[in-house]
Length: 436
Image 1 (cartoon, rainbow, N blue to C red):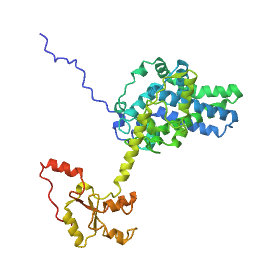
Image 2: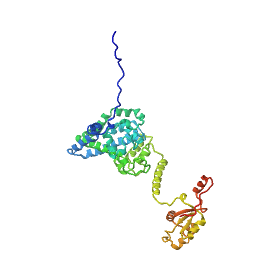
Image 3: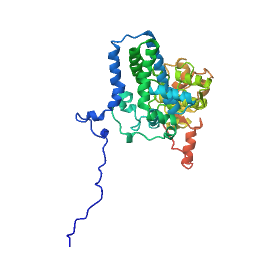
Image 4: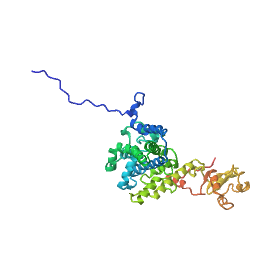
């Protein structure tokens, strides 16, 4: 009889959880693994070679004009296409316009529509958190380019819904063929236009291709960095987005970022006629010629609500830094007889509208003279102060509020005392026999 054999286990060995490179310390031995080398090539390496080649390549006037025009087109592919059309669906575009924007947007080499929009939606949903793929909280340089140069753990980027993009055949086509689209539209196409048009093949590649690419990329990156650092916050200051004309100038109108983060579904970034937003103007023009429709505008009433609320918040902050005197509810309650008695003892007190004020330090400074203010001491000076002798200014009312030391019982109805009396079961408040 054969000897018994050890049972053979068919269980697979336990798999150790893989650790993403970004979860490891940045060291001299693994730094090269922490870098997205493909991105480094397309946002630094190629551009550096282009600037070196430009030193040896004359710039023709026609090529300069073409480079500037193509910069605008590829920038528009990002701002009007990737951003406002696909990321935020702030308007609808006809198929020819969608194809145009998908192609010229690819010429900016900032990833496919699907990849770009997925990151941007996460940026809006998780602004200024660790789930924000280019959070400015990690530093302005990181939000500008660092997030592209250093690898990111995709599991740590906030989750968003991109089912609409996955169902868009043009978006899926561009995503699958992005390498071809990007290389052709970024380098081959601008070179062919300059080469076939006026014989400047090298200039077309270097100036309209490579250097133009550098400018449009850096301009777009400013939306992630500069627009979260420079400018005002007229609609909300709970997060970092800001409005500034400089950022708008370099980003084809994307610089009114505080407005955009508050009202992302609006096809506009700039809502005032004088604000620079060529992307908005192009979308409006496309609507006029029938290429765009369903332009989304957030209700003006709600926009103004946000503006007024932010103004009120700033006013409240400024108000909180000023001395408005002791609140009425914190003042002692004084009987009339006690008030008069204290004045007979030499205290310079004056009652106005049921509130007792200590004017001893102001008697000599009173613009109306010492005699007039002295005549109000120990009396009800409400009529004198409010027009009986002189109708005092708002500044005088504000100054008087800093001098109050008590509330005259029976001289004015103070709501806080009514509430406190009700809460105490009708027992009232303890009497204050002296205000000192």
